[in-house]
Length: 406
Image 1 (cartoon, rainbow, N blue to C red):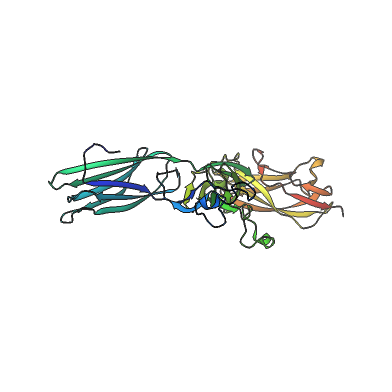
Image 2 (image 1 turned 135 degrees about the vertical axis):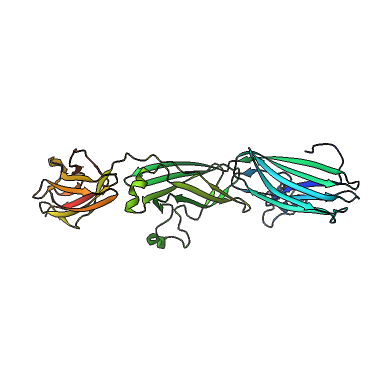
């Protein structure tokens, strides 16, 4: 669109740079027993060998419009200023800007300053690129200023509008599992063409260590095709409106980061890279993925080590770990549930006291236990409470042990 109807010495052409498309045609075919026989075969346009009865031709077609542009892709276009007249244009100044919402991005600016004129049939060319990061309407503005043969200042401007669409729909859900976080991410292709998912990775927060559950463990890869270490197999294509689910497990990096990991309200970002039919690449990075942290207690404990063989009625040692993530030293008391259904009890003691556990530290405690029944016995009968207020604390892990009869 031009801002006035005045004739100018220069003309401006803009073409989006994309991969070409294969031309389509309507095949004309018939069975040998039909009346036309083989008479229609010479009328068919040339095609790729072996695809005569399909719509694919052998000619590539350049885009005539801006076409579909999706978030995360790189918008590139070729801009040409050509002197269509027989006169000489001086001091040619060209500027290209891309407006998206309230943001204006400068893409290119060129000047030809006397004594370098732009003579008849001369062209000024440029290729500009911009990674699209916003949805909605975008407007490319091209402005040309120059001096004509009479020394008069001339200016014209053209606008090119295009819409940026959403290529993917990403839905996430976080599950708290003890000290870990299980993240579930559903990726849906919202483009009208298939896409090749090159990578879908989770970039965790600093307090987390990532375990990708979408790859086959190395010890199990011997049973699969070489190079095929994905749980999805060799097929990494998503058809339009298809959805693929990715799973990740996040663990605290170190013991001193357990409190930060437990209280974190975000777990990281998803980084998604894809390619479309002719290899055009797109990339999206989500915002921080939310997560509702579990109820936080200052002190919690876990059972970290048990003997390999436990016999009913025979005392055994269990190593426990008590962590203090509060701001003050605590005194705790470790005991066993007196109910006969708990299946375990302390040997020669009714409880164990642990004093002065400093803030942001942990203490290892070994207790002597006695199994009261055989079979699979859970260790949820262990109880930890504050020695002063008797407020109970949380058992992070509830391991199960197999108790032999003799």
